[in-house]
Length: 273
Image (cartoon, rainbow, N blue to C red; front, side, top):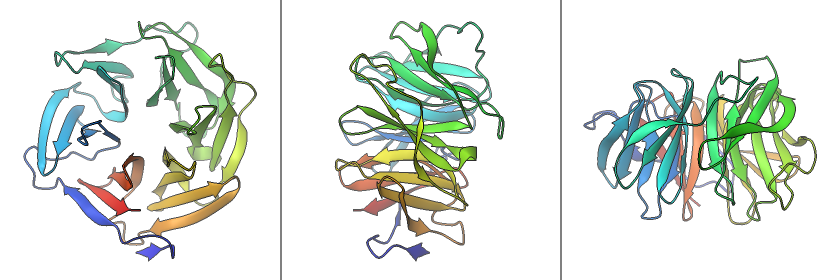
């Protein structure tokens, strides 16, 4: 493991290899207000992890990518059954979410993020190396529209700046993190711009700390990057053995603990910052 001088030693936060049920190659992790972790699985599973206990709450039967947790629902992107799902947290009901957007059939819905007004932004990555319009918005009732009419090269993870005036986008095959200024009306205030280039790293998920520093999951090579300022990219941790960090994808903060999902294995990795 190659660590930045500021980086603490990572550790296995939850080992799902032999758990019952097994944590089935989680792409995403989100943190609930009570500290529990929610993850998806490659069989469409939706898991809730509380301490050393794991529960399969529901399943789409597809292949889950990104998750977003709201006050009353969990939203999930499904790759195998291209579309969005909504899990009602009060009733446990899982149902399809989002109406079709004319002229934009979903190809690879990848990551959802809630907006301050209650809407849902979703990245639709498309296919590797084929730039396309990839940022969509859905109202709470599921009505959808194109949010940014601009091609992106595999739009993936999304994250807000602390003031919600900038949306960050991991552009996997663009080898960059893009930034989009957002107006008071919740609309793009300009085109996507390069916030930081990541040559040699296929970026996937994003998390932003309270100071505005970006942490980035790099699917390949297996690493976590840190971007403390525009254009300044640091290798925070790189696992040459792809073991403790194994194709890391999405990340989330639980207080000062950075939680990382590993699509290549069956565990979650933690860093105490």
